[in-house]
Image (spheres, rainbow over the protein chains, first blue to last red):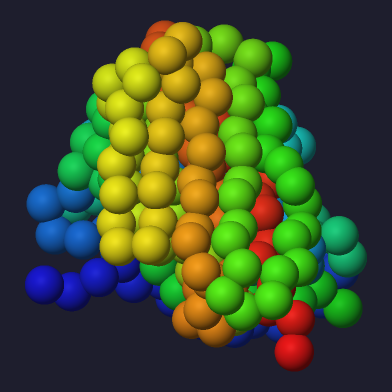
Length: 113
Length: 111
């Protein structure tokens, strides 16, 4: 079956702009989590959605937001981009939120100039 | 807040030597998962440990979960070039199952 699909794969934006990233989970998976990864850094948790509800949120400013649709697809939005937002944004899907493995997408590489 | 500390940050080994990474949580976990991220790739699930004191093996990889369900380790015997990458542990909170990630250990094979 198809894996987790993230679009776009690469993105270049200018400081101050906003961006929307998309994630299509594995069919049947209802939980989607988002992470930010910068070079040499671990995975910084952004938020987690399950059945269209945000279950958990990481320590990121309000410029970072997300949502999940009824078909489990998820989007994250970053407004007023800053240079420090340049990173790999990874989406992971799971069957549900309880003790199940996470399947990651290839990520979206965002560069803010 | 709840943290999962992972050490070391880097480990340089000669091919054929062993490798170990350790994770320690400040609180008891529901379970712990291990992932591997190859250079330029995305994290890939390796295994999940659920029971206190659990030990699981996958070929040359041995995973352990502590008796108190607060710590875990991954040991690779006789490393090969294919083992290169960053290994992450992720502990699941008892209260809400949120995964708390370690910072990762990068395995580097010396030329």
